[in-house]
Length: 181
Picture 1 (tube, one colour):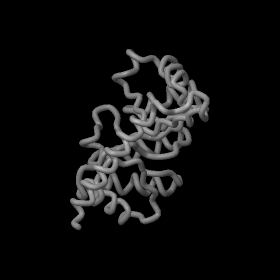
Picture 2 (spheres, rainbow, N blue to C red):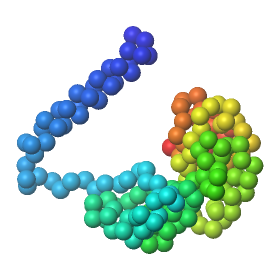
Picture 3 (cartoon, rainbow, N blue to C red):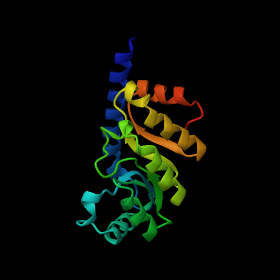
Picture 4 (cartoon, rainbow, N blue to C red):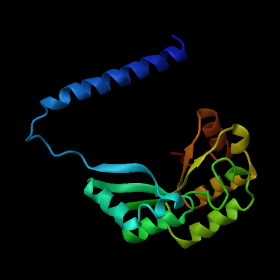
């Protein structure tokens, strides 16, 4: 059985389990256990959302939904800080390298990114650098990414990367002690 066949089997199993859960949902007892708390592991509060969704409104909406925590990052980082200042009990901050013209497609080649990360890491405690995107192994091997990996290891925080397996392997080759989400 080749690797592609396993992929299709996993997809089929996931689809079957989803349908089974939907089928069984009406049979759940009204007096059953309370639902498990929700922790949102991927929230971006970037500049384009700030005027439409003020930080207090975002926090209120998240709390009203029963969410007990959010792993937040933003472009630029000021969005994360806005949420963190209003709800330190709710917001788990990550530091995203995107800012002022530095995007998911360019951050790895931007020579100023390591200094930006160092400056922000000196200002407050983050649990990770990310979420960031890396599209190729060559991008992952850039001097900027090497510096980001070194900073993560130095600060004992994880790297939250959106990438495929070869890129993840390249990051681990830079420093096997890095922790990757």
